[in-house]
Length: 146
Image (cartoon, rainbow, N blue to C red):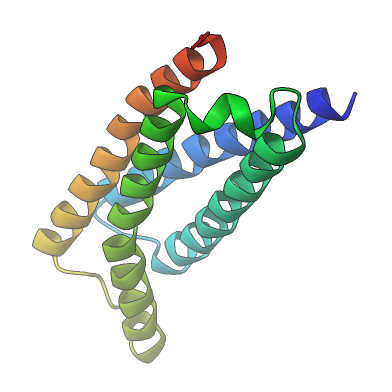
């Protein structure tokens, strides 16, 4: 039963990441950026990403298929690489959100420059787009027979 529990937790957390990225994009589309909300949301996104990773590790180590299944599974490694790229891409938006929050704390009327918002929104869009191959690799990984 713990196999199913780990899978459910992993999937719910993954859906949470998708929702959080969609919310970030929505916040970045307006002309009045809710900097504090965006910063809090991004902190939650980082925390959930860590939980997705940790539950994924638990599934690999203690899950039904075991490490032997994953170590030679090319789709597993493609999924890990894609997740890592998404994580690396999220660094620049996080740094920008923190910088914006500090500026908003000093000046409550602060709004980030439109050009920077567009650049950061572009990075978040790439993160969202990379969720598609991530999901495809996950599906292929689960069905891989070696």
